[in-house]
Length: 217
Image 1: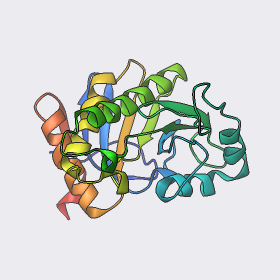
Image 2: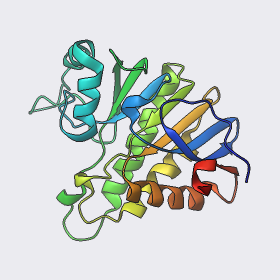
Image 3: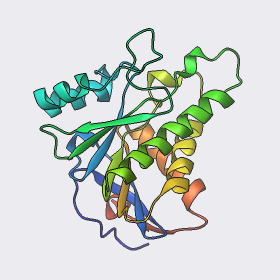
């Protein structure tokens, strides 16, 4: 496979797939460092901030991003001050980030699922990715990067491979005209390896794959 020709956007492209007119990149690093139109944050329902990548994005985005998140309206039907429904996404400015927009998406909490019937949670995870792309389209985003939704502590007993495959499928199904690049970004080595395998299952049969030279080292 040929060396990846995608521009340097602050994350390390491991493999990319041509899907319609969009380059879908499997990348390593942190969305905090992404240079492009938008990043997708793994937010909670409160919408103001939390730990992990959510906290890192707030820190990097600075006071302007924090203030913008506070300006998100509370949902009319929320008893707890929620600003974002599970399976949905809302957008703010990026503040001091290199991305113009931050799309705050809320994935499901799998450890709240009783037993092993994950279908409802899987549907919400798919929806969170799909809503993020819908918000991106509304804001004419051409380059964007997803962190992995519901792939950390919220994953509970759900297999990482399954969670990542759902995300890849949602991205594939909701790519829109005008989207030039979408990066799905893994942070840990295990995430990156599982993400590449999931992407191969979802994109490999129908898209032209390009492997980055970093993998041949």
